[in-house]
View 1 (cartoon, rainbow, N blue to C red):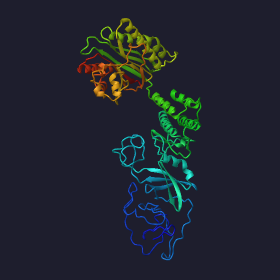
View 2: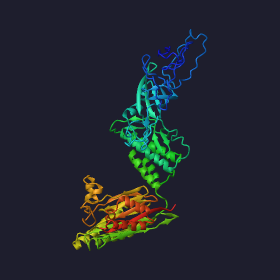
View 3: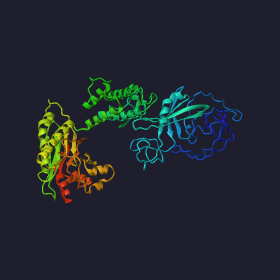
View 4: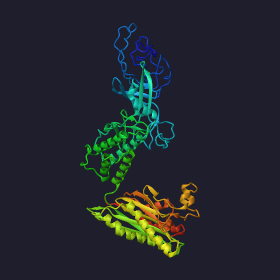
Length: 613
């Protein structure tokens, strides 16, 4: 039966046109309908639905595997002699529910918004897609081995059929920016960017489409409750990272408001890029980029306080207040800088407000050497003010070299120099509330320079080849600042595993970095003890400095190569986590090294951060 409205040939038993949805004439000789397969979760076509008929558009507009829109025909007294009048159609009439688009890839679920120029729909994918468990990107196709966005493996992940927002316009310019973004094939976990664009002829008129990921029901303006500071800062970091990605691709958001932020649990993403702008490559005018940064920061401040920004409105922690001030003073000029500052704020929030340091320390001559050339130092100040514990700890391990009356002298001189300098400078300035704060990194460089000069001067006076490796950690305000020279090491040990913080200044480490040796081969290499940097060898030395945030339950391990060279990292982790105390851990670590031959002196300091509430 041919539709009188659009001319499409339909089956004799059809009540509505499968292309345009118009009511078809009734017939007194209608045969029983032929059953078709029910539509599955992904909208799979039933057998026979790929038959192409009709004029002009050779693909059905409406998914005939689901019930069509329920148009009810007027009663007719003479069904064989009468025909319904053709419906008057608007120039840009909305699509019916069940309409199929993009070669069968999408099915219209319902109309969201209708206007003379732009229609928006909820649409479901009829293709099996896979959502990445690592980054949340949901537009990987079934069969892809790796995520398009982050490269993570997609093995063992089940496909799904997600919903999308479908925008439709008869004027290409109305959705030009979003269509251009879709063509750029951009992906970022912090932005719900357009994923596809296409055009089709519908009712004789070409229409243009863009497919966008469906946002969360919650945006920055309709959250069910006041968010926590940690959540707001995490959202800001994600959005700043996404903004940096967009800016790298010369995209600015324009008017980015709270309505442009989709929030789902711990995740926040930009969406609705209708007002986005593509800037010229290497654009000299940086104001649109700066405006985005200010808009994001303004939104974060509103989320946090419910007020527009003012320096008089107090926020905490101090690092967050400083970040707001820096943005509005024009001192933070890129989205990447903002993201880094917010990461620092997250680390600041996670630091325990009250904690103590439990320490174990032990040095052993080993099974072969006649003299112990290692030295260690632990220096602590237990500070409790207004019931809040915030101790300061200084920890040093030194492995002397040069033989009797040389190596042990070198390590001892270095330790003594650090102790004297710390008592004169670090402790008074750190503990005294009215004293200026110490820049720990500068203090570390200054201290190691002093220790190096002390050893170097004695080396020249005694005409020996003395020297010492050196690893020094200052723990304060929930963070460890670690400086080292040589191959004595610092490790972070916790329930998640063991991580080496320092990188050896040794020959075998360079061979590992150039892929001439594996870490396993380096452990037995005949030149594994050759180091190229130590205290005392030269008049000046530059240490490596690392920063490490500590949380309750974390252990900081400082040790000489008499331990790290003869006990595997996995065994070190197991021993520390199973020990009854940091001191017990030191004893058992040294026992393990001696059990493996103990060919070198063995020294270990274990520092545990313990929360006090």
